[in-house]
Amino acid sequence: MVNKDFFKQPTLEVARQLLGMELVHETGNGRLAGKIVEVEAYKGPEDKAAHSYGGRRTARTEVMYGEPGHVYMFLIYGMHHCFNIVTGPLHKPEAILLRALEPTEGVELMLENRYGVKESYTRNHERNLTNGPGKLSKAMGFNMNHYGLPLQTSEIKLQEYDNIKDEFVEIGPRINIDYAEEHVSLPYRFSIKNHAYISK
Image (tube, rainbow, N blue to C red; front, side):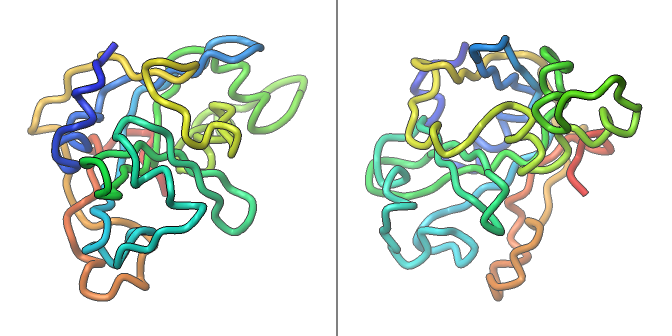
């Protein structure tokens, strides 16, 4: 399990190092886990794609102004939860969005979380299980109840799993942030090259 100092590193360094780590959620129904394969960094007040751009401070963004290593959850389109990790120093509201995971434990429960109870699941169900931020949150059982929880001291943990060498890492612009003007092209998206669970 990584220690709290891990989250105090510069946000882009944390984003790169998250690739290959395993995110674990201990639930009342069982243990859910997945290897992180795609993330996006958001650099706070100077980043036009960030919720905290310009120092915006609201009930939604408040957790980002606190200590790093906490969960920042938000809703998109009023229905899809997105799981983020707060990074950056105190009062510097930065965060990393987890875009995709490769399931490593609890796949049957993830399938049930995503699709409901069914007699059988197809290969297509598994392929699309966690390849997007809303999908992975639903599969992993994350919702607004997890907003503000500390990582490593709660039911949600990060641990070492797979060391991804630099030659297998792709760095490029973030997705679906057309509103961010000149910041659209910033190389803040990190992913494992050609991985089957990269988001669409």
